[in-house]
Length: 288
Image (tube, rainbow, N blue to C red):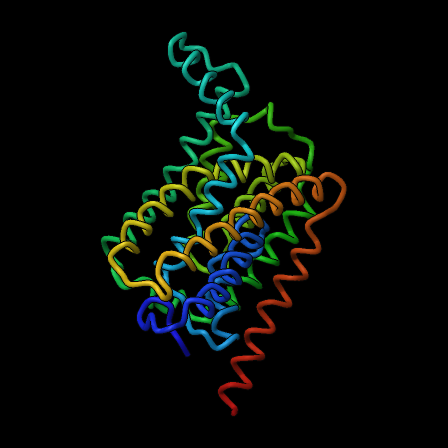
């Protein structure tokens, strides 16, 4: 198996193909509630390419960052203006201002967890929590939680009713996404459904809340990635970033429309099948 970082021996065209596939996988799975980190580890390993590593996935993730910032640019400008006005006047009744405060508070848990991992688990990329067995089990557990949220959630609240506490609650769920298989989008969507949100509003809040976390994580890992050789050089990297950007934009637009009239049961079923397939593949590999 070829590691795109540790053994950058691929030819340019082969590296372009690998990064194109990884970019598409990143774009589809970053915003759908199915875990991008899990798929970016599992898909290339199943294809015989090896684990691409955190550095490669962080670079490709920049495409998703640009896509979500561009897609929600009007929302972000409105929230920014509302927060400035609210901080000057001391009045946080405006829904956009409350949303900004909820996003800020909701980002703190994953920042704390991320810093703790960096400090206390320096080799986290190779920890048991990132193993394929763990990814399979976690994916299936989160599928069950999403199913319960889908069944019990009241689905009455809209984004204009957001409170700072909502940011804390969903932010804690987002922090769980440092474990591959949890899915940042999936954990925040699940928590929002438990909190009584409508599906489409829950997804929108999930995307907006994830912007600081995705951006910070991507920039931190990108800094580390610059110190490592990449297969094929800059060209294939750009292919991966651009494919992630385009597919991420399409995935965001599709999911927001989909959840207006459909439930999350499709994702529950997919996650169960994904986890079971990994376990079955591991079992056959071990037996063979």
